[in-house]
Length: 265
Image (cartoon, rainbow, N blue to C red; front, side):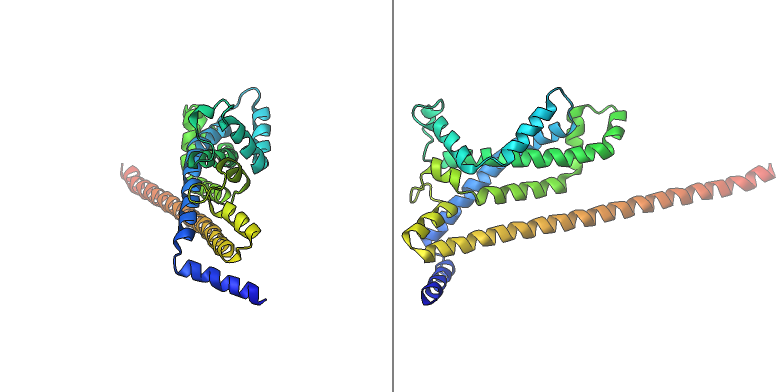
């Protein structure tokens, strides 16, 4: 018990004192995950929005593969990226193996199916509700996908936050392609695994507490975005009702004004 208490106290001291080694690992981890999430979202949002609207032969097969990639183990992704970036692999000439770029690529590949699948479901649900109206106005599939994605921007913002949480908590793929090199490719999850195996519990606990804090902040942001979306929808509904009532009032006033004129004529 004393050993555990001492480890927790030392971990808190590392966090409070802003230990340089701990901050370097945290900063590198956040940079890798943010870059990978940005890359995956740039492609996944567009692809998912298009899949939510487009109808083509083989769409069911594509969606089945997409849903399969949601459950793919991270170590398998790491192995595939490792083979691609190795010296004998097709991308070996890039020299990315055991580097920041390799970890970004691995996390982007992991996050891309999540962003694409969630975006596709969100846009497809919106298409079922508003798609007929947009089609009657002559909107093509690509235009409908963009309009519906913008209309569901709050939900897609939640998807982006969730995808960052998926990336920052990943360990298997980045350990394989990054090598967990101290000062270069060591991130929070790989450092926790290494320091625990070495018995350096204070540093592992400190990184674990920071990682939990990051996940907590992400969940709070998701809740805030959801609440913001609900309030926006309530305000939009109230504004539409107010405009409708105003139009009805003007129409009634116009009819009341026309009535006496007809009688006098």
